[in-house]
Length: 237
Image (cartoon, rainbow, N blue to C red):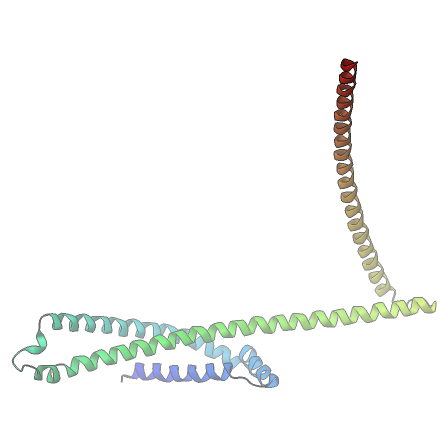
C-alpha cells in the first residue's frame, strides 16, 4: 500500500473512532464537556482547517482510484471477450496470467472504497460539528433570556410589594420601564378586544341584514298567498 493510501486508512480509522465516541450513550456531564471541547477548543479549530486540506487530498485520491478501477474493469472485460485467458496454456492461463490483473483490480477497488468512506465520514463529522455549534448558541440564548426574565420578574415583584406597602418605589427608572411595559400591554389588549368586538358587531349586523331580507321576502310571499286565497273565495261566491 502506498503512503497516501496508508494515510487515508489511518484517517478513516480515526474518523470511525471519533464518530463512535460521539454517538455512544454517555452521561450528560461528559457529553456536555465533549460538546464544549468540540465547539470552543482552538485545537479543534486548527484540526478543522487541516481537515479541509485533507478533504481535497482525499478527493484527488478517490478520483485517481476510481479512474484506475474503472480502467482495469474495462480492460478485464475486453480481455475476457477476446479470449485472452485461454491462449497457449489452456485453463492454466486463468491461474498464471490472471493473478496480477485481479490483484491490481482488488487494490484499486479497495482504495476507492477506503477513500470514499473517509470522505463521507469527514462530511458527516463536519456537519455534526456545525449542528453542535448551533445547539450551543441556542442554549446560550435561552440561558440569557432566562436570566433577563428572572431579573424583570424580581423587579416587578419588588415594585408590586412596594406599592402594596404604600412606599415609594426605590428604583424610579425601573418603575418607569415597568409602567411603560404595563401600559403597552394594556393598550395592545384593549386594541385586540376592540378589534374582536368590532368584527363581531360587523358579523352580527350582516346577519341582521340577511335575516331582515329573508323576513321581507317571506312576508311578501305570505301577502301574495293571502291575496290568492281571497280571490278564490270571491270566485266561489
